Length: 324
Image (tube, rainbow, N blue to C red; front, top):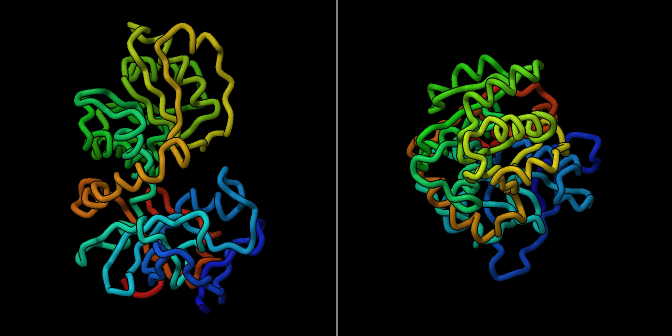
């Protein structure tokens, strides 16, 4: 089946909009759908560059991890792409019907395509990885990014009593109280001042959602543990993103001198089935405005120029195949 799609033929070049041969369905659960909207998430970019840990290195490929589409029977769905199938940045694609979540016809497809992926990380982390208890406190490290901003809202929606947001962008940091942050911490180049501010604002939190990793995470871990009044009280650190670097250097005493649990959340850490079970409640939350997102819709046909354009801070780009 000949379609048009964003096609990656080299990891060193942005996808080009061109004709592509869509493979036929092979399993009884595979269906073809018309794609309406696909989010251009950071996860999509790393996959298209071959740098994501799930990358097979196989080319050509059509990128994307999720989207909104319409099945042949007319039903509107949110879907999660299967790593073994053609990606969703195309006019049509093959999906596993078991990975499709029904959507109401009134839904804002651009908003859903924009919000599901970044919101899913914290939603699943706080419901499946370390289920949050009502009233617990949360630190979001990397709170000025899109996923971090949503994590603040997600934590509040799931019952957090206090949420602290930490990030570098001071302008966006100042906006966090409007979406639920009870306190904020600026991550600066002054390591001592930053550690002191983190210890003062967040040493007693119960959970940390970390989108940064690298040096900021290593410093924050020690600042929180050293500032904690009771090191025997459990601190759960959930590692999700690595915007500040793929590795950290952490003293072994951090693991021996406190009740500190370090774990990750992502593909493999939580089963695909568990992720899918969480999606209906998350789509409902986004649809009714419980989690805010700012999105811009651009034509899929312009993918090559959109890919290299400067991202607008706080705005999620969504590629659409027509009018939505």
